[in-house]
Amino acid sequence: MEGETEIAVGSCSKPCGPLEEYFIPDYILKPDAEQVLVDHAPPCPVVVFINSKSGGQLGSSLIKSYRELLNNAQVFDLSEEAPDKVLHRLYANLERLKIEGDILAVQIWRTLRLIVAGGDGTASWLLGVVSDLKLPHPPPIATVPLGTGNNLPFSFGWGKKNPCTDPEAVKSFLGLVKHAREMKIDSWHILLRMRAPKEGPCDPIAPLELPHSLHAFHRVSSSDSLNMEGYHTFRGGFWNYFSMGMDAEVSYGFHSERKRNPEKFKNQMTNQGTYAKVGLKQGWFCASLSHPSSKNIAHLAKVKIMKRAGGHWEELHIHHSIRSIVCLNLPSFSGGLNPWGTPGTWRTADRVFTPPYVDDGLIEVVGFRDAWHGLVLLAPNGHGTRLAQAHGIRFEFHKGAADHTFMRVDGEPWKQPLPTDDDTVIVEISHLGQVTMLANEPCRSKSVNDPSSPSQAHDSHGDEEIKIEDEDEWEDGKRKFGAADTFKIPDEIDIAHLS
Image (tube, rainbow, N blue to C red; front, side, top):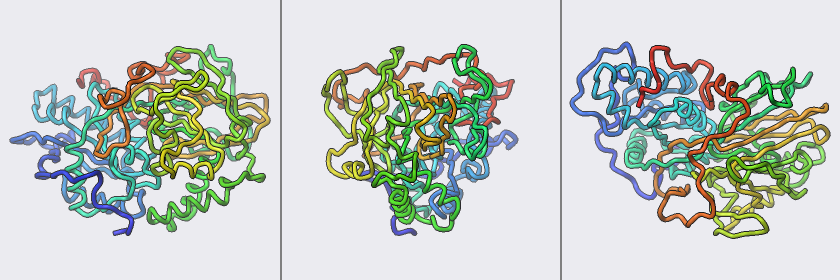
């Protein structure tokens, strides 16, 4: 095993129990399989998604162990089959069996839990697919850390080091999944709108590599001022963070290097060392004159916030020293650091800042000057420059600042072209809804509904939906956040009946 792996996560192990408690029969998973009688429904049926390309060789090894312990048909390699196709097939089959009166199908529908092993981008992909299903009782999700940052697993008590992959370690993890508690977190809608560049490497369709959760919509609202030929709209969602500036540039450099030389990225320690070297090279510790994208945020964009749902946009003043901005939903960034910190409720000027909650309908906006500023996060109670807590945030880019910048959503970076003519690039983030995670102890994420949480200075907005400028456009897009274009419930299945 790699030296940095760990056998278990959380404060203590939980009994796994018989493996039959997690087992799902073939006929539930495969519509064409022969139906069998089962004496008892499994109390914790699981479907496992593993990115075999994550964690060096650990992903492939983990697949092997899970398939040794469970039904092969309930363990999926994401490099071979996308999660939207798997869950589409599974839930359509569950609905058919429920209509036929199959009691086991009903029990599995009620108690199903999902496990996803991979980096933050992989976990966010699955969260998006589950959101697309719009189920009255969506399956909660546990995350196995197989990436470099592993912010999602760390936020919910699943650790941040790559796990051991032997069968005993897998059994230990299954025991934790069985005893984990469900926890709601906010989901965030992101809209990216820009004109297609006439030339250059940053074409908005290809080869621009956007995150899994961003999808192209090749028109805008008829009432929109940008409704003119040549504009493209991308919609998507995220659960952990959106960032822009130098930190995203370093992440983009790291991912580019890994694509060029995948053989050099075989374990977590090496990956983190390479990440630091890229940061030094690209000027994260000191302003780079050769990288125009390293200019401060205030020079690149006009930033506006909406403090409450249905409110108005207010311009957010950002000091000229800020070169990176992070919009954070979870208390983990860059491998477990908490940029917002844990302030008590306090006031400064017209702002009210509170501890961060993952289900309060607010996103925390934090700024950093450089990597030296970021080092304060290593100190007790360290935090970045707290800029705002908001229900929405909007970035407007105009001609003149630079020809590109870098952005990142839940661990997936991209190089974003900026206007070269009298155009506008817009990135808008708004609260959408919630998804369900599985939390293990100790869990860093805090819920506004937890009785032990401090009283709030604001109302929760968890059940409110985003206001959009064109409902038809949104409906045409099927509200896709993580599913591929192939996702479609069969005509004969009414998704509303899945309750």
